Image 1 (tube, rainbow, N blue to C red):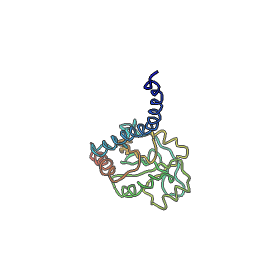
Image 2 (image 1 turned 45 degrees about the vertical axis):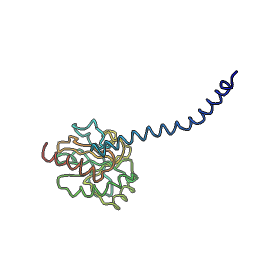
Image 3 (image 1 turned 45 degrees about the horizontal axis):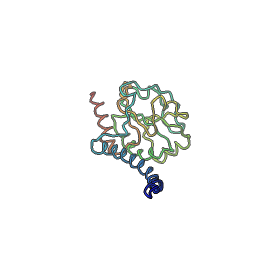
Image 4 (image 1 turned 90 degrees about the vertical axis):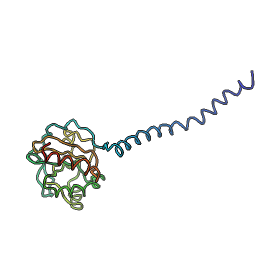
Length: 200
């Protein structure tokens, strides 16, 4: 047997020893490439990857019959609360960090006379929700309590915060998954509001 043949198993073991640690690196680079492509699409092509398509877009909003958040001095959230006016339905909770991040934008939107903002308080404790609103302010005209998440399921909620723009006749016009920021406000929501007000 030649020396070259005898060394082949050792060479294979040596190569395997160096190749195995590279597998996690290759997987990570694959994920990084996908994430980079999504960010590129969002930043360069202007496509907001958080604006997930919804089966509700263009359809009537699911019915609402949620009890009020006791102590909030707001009405219960019923279907009539979102009928007859352009309404932003915002799903939030006190334990949701991104909800806290977007709250100043909701407070700002509450001053827009073209729009009514209502909230679905998702799987939250009453006292915590009141503390959240007491600290940050209450932009909602009505708040419905959804302790077991049933209403959120009906609305097709992926995760919170999540918002739906509903026309005066109850048709869902726009959906936003994740918190609003200045970019999504100016590039997505405000144009959707203007389009709805213009009747386009």
